[in-house]
Length: 213
Ligand SMILES: [Zn+2]
Image (cartoon, helix red, strand yellow):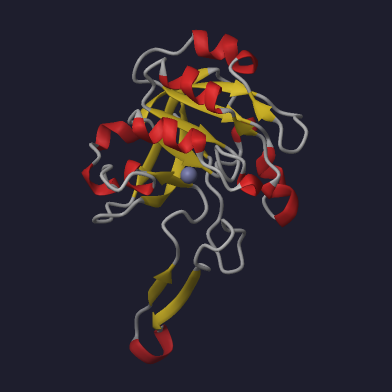
């Protein structure tokens, strides 16, 4: 089995959601002083490639530690929507062939190619996004998780979150900031998005992979 990494590098100075905590990976103990090394980590729960738990949007929603582990590993259908212009709304019609292939419980993986702009701050924020109607069309397929290789499923610069609300209220997890989806050739295959088991957290950074037989 080939394991394809779909995760961004987490490092100091990396691009983050506007206003989120700046990540830092410092030394708490060092080889020189302590004969071993331990890092002190500081970062927002939505740093880099990450997952949103329903508690992110809904005060009564589930936090990440209470979501069953099987929800993070599953069969995904990839829809390729590369070459879109900045801030293009993604509609149901644009995804229709892929939506027909979805079974209840599947993941939907949206490949925009926007990960190529990850280090171009302004352009990265002008990513394509899902319309509320598209989000509604997706949840009607009873999928378990939606993933995108952009900063946000909603339009970041408009500062509104209608797609988040549709997904979170329908118990559909959201993975954002994927990268490297061009390496995934299969339309349908096995993905793993395993977050840290952080008590009460609204999300978590994760290591996203595609498992190619
Ligand atoms: Zn989100």
